[in-house]
Length: 406
Ligand code: AMP
Ligand code: MG
Image 1 (cartoon, rainbow, N blue to C red):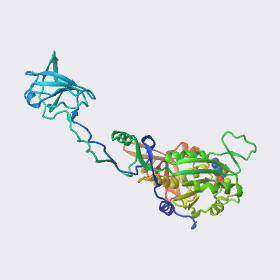
Image 2: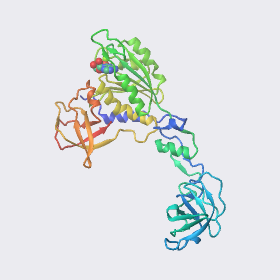
Image 3: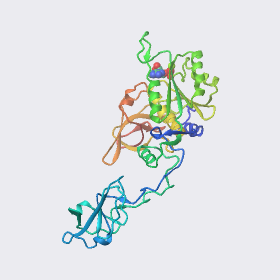
Image 4: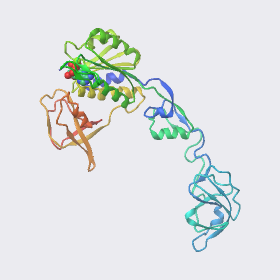
C-alpha cells in the first residue's frame, strides 16, 4: 500500500499545477456561474436623484408641522410627478405635488406623506399626520456613489450580480474563461447510446456522458470525444488531441489490466505523470499528469462510481480554480450517523455514498446499502460522500462523521 498516495498530497499536486485561465469579455448572461476578472464601478450615483419611497404627496416639511387626524393641514395640489414622467412644478409654501414611488422629488419639496395619511377633496389634499423632515425620500447616492466599486474581481456572478451589472449599465463584463475539457471513454466493451448490442460481453457506456454533464455543472466547457477501443494506435490518435484542451479526461484503461494502455500512452503525447494510485476507496486508480502550459490530464477509473468520486474529489476543484473561484471544494459538513457502518479493509480512506439531511438543527447521515463501485444506483440515491478515515473499520450509530455534499 505504500505506493498509494494520500488524497491530501494528490490534491496539493493538482492545486499546485493549476491557475485561473485568461479572461474574456462576455455578455452578462454568459457570465452567470463564472467569476469576475475585473472590478466593476458604478456608472452613476445610485439612486441617481432624490426620489420618493412611497406613493403619496411631496410637501414642504414646514407646512405639515402639527398635522393630525383631528386637525388636518390643507395643501393646494399643483401637479403630479410620476416615475419617468415630465418634471412637476415647484412646491411653494402651502402647496403639494402628488407623487409616485421612484419619482423625482419636485423642487421645493423635502418630505413625502404616504397616501394612507391623506385625503383629497377637489384640488386640495388634507395631510393627517406629521412626518419628519426628509421622510420617505431616498437620497441621491445613498446606496453607492458614481465610481464606487459595486462588484469585485474574483466575485462569483449569480443572478444578483447580473442584476447589478445591468443596473450599472454593463452589457459586457470580463470573466475568466471556462476550461475546455476533452472527454473520452476507453474500452472494447463499450457501446454508445443507441448502438445495438452485438456481443454479449458489451456494456452500455455511461461515463463519458456523465462526465460531460459533471464538467458542465462544474462550470467547464465539455467536449465529447466518445469512445475509443483498447487499441494503442487508435487511443494514441485521440490522446494526441489533448493539446486542444485545458483539461483532458479519460475513463477506463488506467488500472492493472493488460489492456490498460492509458498510463503508457499519455507519456507519448507529452504528459508528465504526477501520480497514479491513491489511498482512497473507491477510485484508487487515478492518473494525473500535466502537459503544456496550465494543462491537466486526468485518467479516471472505469467503474462509474469510481469515475464520479475521482471527478468530484480532484477534477472539480481543478475546474473551479481555472474558473477563478476562491472556494474550490464541494461543501463539507459534520453529520450524525443514524446506522452502524463497518468494512473489512481499513487501509484506504473511503468515500461512502450516503444520504444526508438537515433536521432538528443538525445534519444526519445514512450510508447507502450498496457500496460497490460498479453500482451507479448508489449515487442516484445519495447526495453525499461519508468520509471513513484510514484505519477506521467501524462507525457506530450516533458517531459524528464528515460528509462531502454533492
Ligand atoms: P477498466 O478500468 O477499463 O478496467 O474498467 C473498469 C470497469 O468499469 C469495467 O467493468 C468496465 O466495463 C467499466 N467501465 C469502463 N468504462 C466504462 C464506461 N465508460 N461506462 C460504464 N462502465 C465502464
Ligand atoms: Mg477497460
